Length: 602
Ligand SMILES: Nc1ncnc2c1ncn2[C@@H]1O[C@H](COP(=O)(O)OP(=O)(O)OP(=O)(O)O)[C@@H](O)[C@H]1O
Ligand SMILES: [Mg+2]
Image (cartoon, rainbow, N blue to C red; front, side):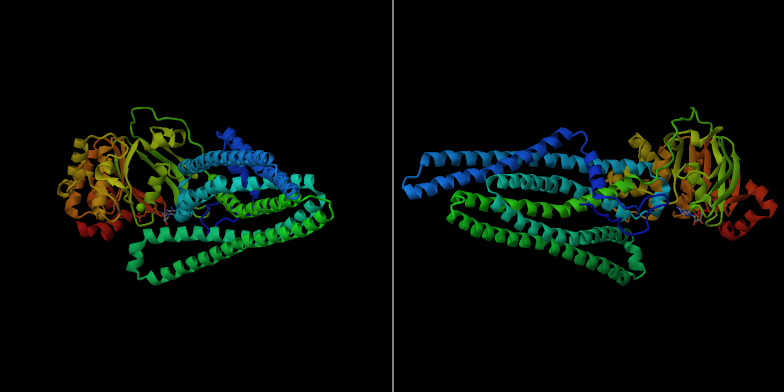
């Protein structure tokens, strides 16, 4: 069975990603198969065990047939050969027991393999995250990515564990059963096969319909994940804008679609067992009638009819197994495709292995840098600047001028379109991103804290001692607050709302303070703290800047005035540069900014 698998809705893929290209079921399962690498021996042993189980289960009816014949013979002669019956009974028992053992083993191994496969898929996606360009995070829907990590990998694991075994078991049983029936009696085999074929056709029809509903269901699950994660992260905004009603409607719409698609797939899938049961019963009746006529005519014996009744049951079983496992196998194919799609997303250009030579002097040069977030609009238009080691550079400009973007380029969160950025004369393209980023400690415009203690947030990725962490807290004026907490530094920051914005900024600055990297970037680092705290922090920042090349983006004059070099940005390029006094005397853009923005503080 092959099918076009859905790509879940939304326009969250960045350019260059495949989303419309149809893929086949076999391709998706080939991908799943690739993930069984390392467990292939057990994988094939499990399939072998399914074969053993199927063979043993299918062989039992012929012994039951012999037992029946001995018993019916005994009815005529009045003497049932109990020894032969018990001998055959023991063989049957042994067959069923061995079949059960084989089933247990393949269940065990398959469960093991499937969990490894799901784990490896999640791991591959996690590794992929590190290689995705920042552009991806700008445009992807978080909920959709989450659903690939959890729902899709789970679906694959489940199908591999349960449905694949059931499917293969069904196919094996079907083949073995057909052979045994043909060997036993051609006419009765014909009757059983014709009824089964009718059953098969009906189930194919049902499966075809269900496939559509399954796609719909997967798409709706993705949408639901997306909406829930959006609503969760923007809960306060939703409340503030009284947007509860609108969001309720959005939620209800998706929820209702999910219900309908779920109901449709369940109901059509649920039809299958009923239909199969009905066809199976028809099969019994047909075999009984034709069989009785043949027994009366002396063509076959009673045991053969009994064996055929068992065969028909066994024959319908696999059809049912195949059709019911198909749904999960399809869902897993769709899941694997979504995972594959994620893994094939365009990556950042390969990283250079180059390292920066130690020690870092801190000479930074922007050489005619051009860059845009999308191909059709240029954000940075020919940015050039030379910064000497240890200089304190302030970047100022109106909102949207491109200040943060410049920093993003310096850190290689994005790559320049043309031009170059050099550190100590070496292009940042020739350094690994890791070694480049390790040269800077930074406080970003968006405060970033993770779930953990205040201590771990400050000492992030360093082996700072308790004293160093506490000293950093003192320098940013956070010591009193921390002392007032019952758990002090070990207080867990559980939610994004448990600290004020200013406190979050203080923690981020403290993090930069314990980080001993040779250069410094501060993007609106103190925009949320009050002026008194800012004065405290400013002292800490000043000492941190001592001898370090520093980039400071600030709207406040106090932070800018003492800079060695002020770069004034407008629409993505530098329109003026110089010291505070030089720029003021020039009577240009800085002068305007100074009057409009800084005057009030002065
Ligand atoms: N991730 C992004 N994707 C697309 N466009 C972006 C992205 N980030 C910024 N921009 C756009 O690039 C331009 C420059 O943004 P940037 O963040 O560099 O401004 P800024 O000077 O730092 O402003 P502010 O003072 O408000 O922080 C803006 O027009 C903005 O809309
Ligand atoms: Mg900014």
